[in-house]
Length: 442
Image 1 (cartoon, rainbow, N blue to C red):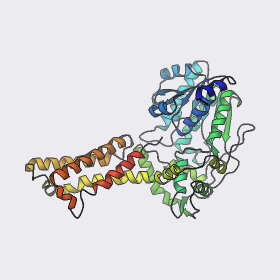
Image 2 (image 1 turned 120 degrees about the vertical axis):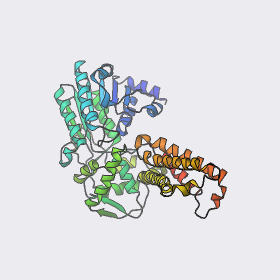
Image 3 (image 1 turned 30 degrees about the vertical axis):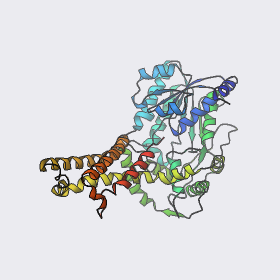
């Protein structure tokens, strides 16, 4: 049945609400958007980069905005036009692309003030369990402060605290689970016995739907978690079976081995990459992902096994799982390749310039040598900066084609050189294409 007919039928049975979804392009926000739209509500999605979302979910109206930059003046017309504000926005850790205090705390306080000045709006907040040993982490601390401010604001609210969310799609921690499950031969895990409570994406969306239609009363603060709480090792094994891979033994690694990985992931975060291996995630996993199962009355979330059974995997899931942790390896490999390509000729620039001296004056040959070295070095540096990575990868492809064309035209014999200087450009081009194809995170 066409979606507009479905919406019309459902709208006849529900009160149509105008809902503003913050973080609507994200893993959880996009799934909830689809559920609320199917319920017949009018949806406005807000995100920093909604261009693709407009194509994927045309049923919603889209606003491009950065929460961290919205002032009280900016919030008022947004709030004024909507009955419900649904906050699905968030970030794991500070980095080039994220500011936790600005996004998860200050922006929310400004929003609450705007909503209160307009007579109040229902705020549905997707939060997390913010107590426990990891509660001092900035991710959980800013969430907790925003939750406390919402409770104290006098606004009608529903706070939902899902455990690890599992659904058809994957992002962050769920993507990491799939990747670990796809390891060949063994399953290398740190904190393998940590408990990991889960909740299905469909159940999170159901809880939000109930909050919007009033089935969950305002001023509710609820955990969303399935009854069973598997260990990390058990959850990875479930995902391995879901991917259709033969069982493999778990190799429990000491926590100390995670430190170099988290250090590298934190550094990548400062460059704009949102790795699920950052120190915040490992700190949370050290005590486990817990849920009190204090959900809505009559609400029985599906367990991890049932959730995975409801959405059988395809070959694309196996490809994603295997490529997920290979992507940073590809980016680093390309970075080192181009950096070395630019730095090695500088050891003896005269010898490098000799390749151009057959058709250029000596000074011009040296200038071209130095210029190509600079270009290679810049590409090697910029590809590891997330906002610049796409342009750097496209630049690598363009420069590679220029090098191949120039080498073929002026020094065609290099194709027959035993060391294969031109032949080796071809696999780097293929690797660049694969990196470009897997660059998108959402």
